[in-house]
Amino acid sequence: MLFRSIPGDVNATTDQITVTAHGASSGDGPVQFTTDGTLPAPLVANTNYWLIAIDANTVQVATSKANADAGTAIDLTAAGSGTHTLRLNKIIASENHYRYGINVVAFSKRQLSFVV
Image (cartoon, rainbow, N blue to C red):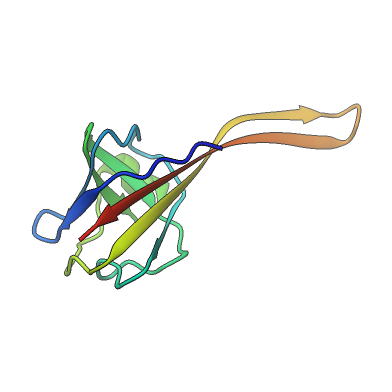
């Protein structure tokens, strides 16, 4: 597991979240948000979303991988308040082991935090 805490902010006008050096690619996900305050509207805590990487420091959020791949972001109507945490669970490898009747999946986890 890899955890990184990174400061950032939310721009409800551009629907963008600034997370310096986030390392994400468009279509990464699912991601889930938690907060110690109020999430940017209309995001819901512990709900699956996918990322749209605008640049190395900025992302938008989509409701599905297909929407993320198409660049269709959620319309953020408010920035929210408090410290928000974004958890990315990404499958990095999957392998079937038929001999043993198991499926092995490797996950990469990242945690990014931003304050508004």
